[in-house]
Structure formats: structure tokens, C-alpha cells
Amino acid sequence: MTNIPPEIQSYKRTAWKPIIIEGDGALTASKFAGKPWLGKHEKWPKCPLCQNPLELFVQLNLNQLPEALQNEFGSGILQIFYCTNQFGCNPSPHKIQAFSDAHLIRIIQPERKKQRIEIPKNQDFFPPKLIVDWQKLEDYSNSEAASEFGIELNDELYEDNFPIEGDKLAAWPL
Image (cartoon, rainbow, N blue to C red; front, side, top):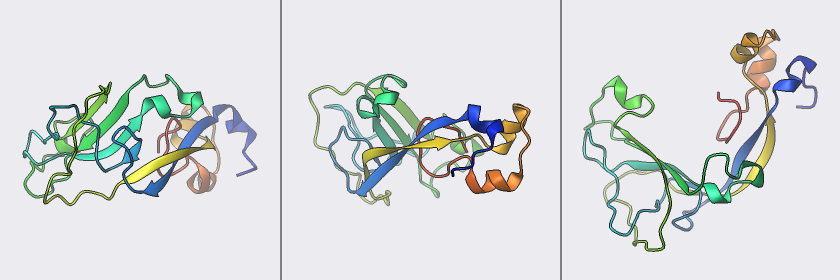
């Protein structure tokens, strides 16, 4: 969008949209789904509520993020696993809350020794998508956040343009 209202210009944040291709890549690669980095003797993480394998949602190699984000989130590999078992897992609303027992969120420092990783059998996991690059975008807050800053703009402008929807890193949340 080229005509950004002057009232929100100062609230611009840089967003980084992942450029993806189908496939898994190296165990230390940034990716959605696929094979995560696991330590030499580490087992695939399981949900403590239902004992099903947790699904890798995203793995980001923090050392390979765009230069502008270097050290923004630390170093190592950020991994987010989530239980996707809809039938055997406790259907409690706590399962979907951030940082519930049905999640595993961690930053690891991969060691040189790794193991051969196999996706757990009989799991309907998402197909892997490898992050091969990042596209730099300008992002602006949603209308609720703008209101908190004392800015009132046309809701239609926000619905059509802000914040950027879809996968992104380091910008305004949806």
C-alpha cells in the first residue's frame, strides 16, 4: 500500500514474511513441519496429556534469520511443537491456551552429534515446508491498537490492509 495515513506512519514495524518451498531440508533448517533437530539420544516429544507424538509446527534457526533480526531472539534453534490429536487428547480448553501442557516451546543449542530422525508412524502430520528466504515488509497495527494510541481511522482501511495477515515474524500481531 502506498498511501499510508500520516497518523500511523510512526507506528510502522518491519515484518519478515517467510519464503517457502515444499520439502524438509536439513535438520537445523528453518521450516514449518517436517523433521526437527533432536539430540543424539532424544526421543520425539510426546503430549503429556494423551501420549501422542507432538507435531512440529515451526522450527527457526535463529542464527540464520535476516541480519536485522540477528540476536533479537537469542541464538540456537527455536522449536514449537503442538498436540494435534483431536480425539484421544483431553479436549479441555486449557489445551489450546498458550504454554499449556499440550505444547513444547524451546530454544536449543544443537550439538554436533545428531541422530537419524523418522517421523512417527501413523501420524497425519502437516507436509513440510522449508523456509528459504525472508521478504521484508512494512506492517502497521490493527484498529484496536491504533485506538489505544489515540488514532481513529476508517475500519475498512484496517480490514483491507493492516496488520499483514499470514505467516510473518517480528511485526504487529493479528
